[in-house]
Length: 120
Image 1 (spheres, one colour):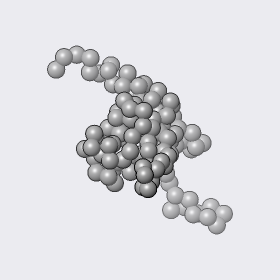
Image 2: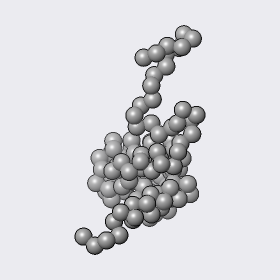
Image 3: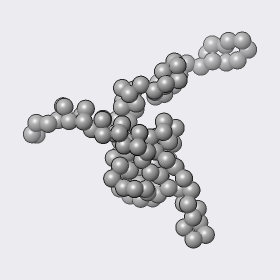
């Protein structure tokens, strides 16, 4: 760990897709989306208007902590919108894919089709 002017600076985490300027490149973002939990979560969210965590969990087969981590990452990178709604007396976390998230995921799928268009 390096220190600079009295504050500790750490090297970026290997899964952090931000560049040194703080921007996120499309290639890095697509690589990050290729993580199976994130890929499954985005794949489900682009098919629905909005969803809650249990529905995402049921569709993707992910554990609740994995869903939470995937949604947190996607929200941090503005690929999804997270909001709280009420279901009777109970608060429910609702997630929907943002337009940028939908576009980024479609671009990733288009890129992947280049490699898998043949029959298996």
